[in-house]
Image 1 (cartoon, rainbow, N blue to C red):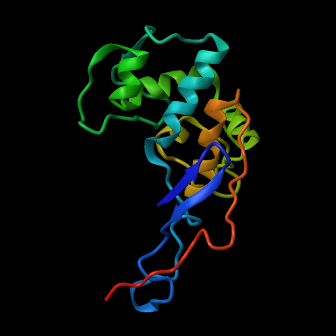
Image 2: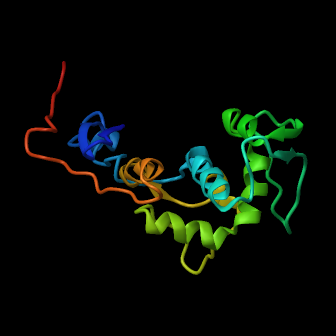
Length: 175
């Protein structure tokens, strides 16, 4: 977990492990800086960018229906389909298929480049190109970089850099 004050980009809290020194429980991995799947965390970015480009508006009807692109067949968490849904509803309900539809219209390579420009590089396997799976967690990302990138929503797609100052982060161990 990381808590960032987006007014000054200072870190107010950081918990990357129960105990970074506990090798027996693999506590030495700081999950704030580890590369992990972002899951649905990127959906607000694709909707925001598509809104800014005029590709969609909050009431746009998106299709939450089965789709296939080559061998890629995304689905929803609930394994169901909900037909036409507004962009707003798709975002609130974190529906996967409308997000894939919007990413397809925006362009996966363009999306990855825009995220990189706001300080959120996506980590792909060697030789892999950005594709539609990005929006559903098909790339790696770091939690600290995602937290910093969210500041782009307040400043016309310019993110800040998080800062950790002496005394902000303290180690506490309860027994």
